[in-house]
Image 1: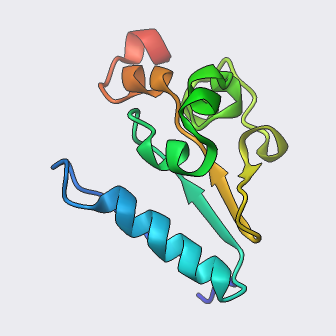
Image 2: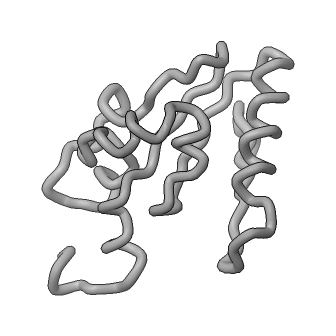
Image 3: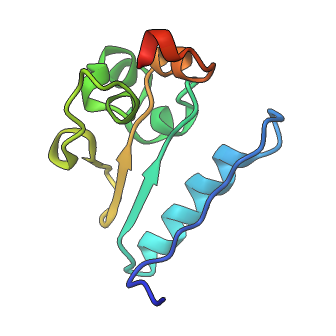
Length: 112
């Protein structure tokens, strides 16, 4: 089945191996080549999100406007609420926020 888009995933449990840097630079290069890019930050540390929007913005961002909304059934994960334009033309991001931490560990009673 052919898709009009590419999906690239960068995932590893080990920290400090360059996942964030790889995604930041690859996304920037794809946008530079006039491709539309959407990055989804699923790391509670939100380093990728901070790279695009700054620490203060991410610290103050309502979790309902972040990737947390995709995991929390009480929130509305409407694309227009969670997808944010970056300062790079054609590059968009669904930022992470600290409350994502609670979804990194299974707890069906809490999240079900």
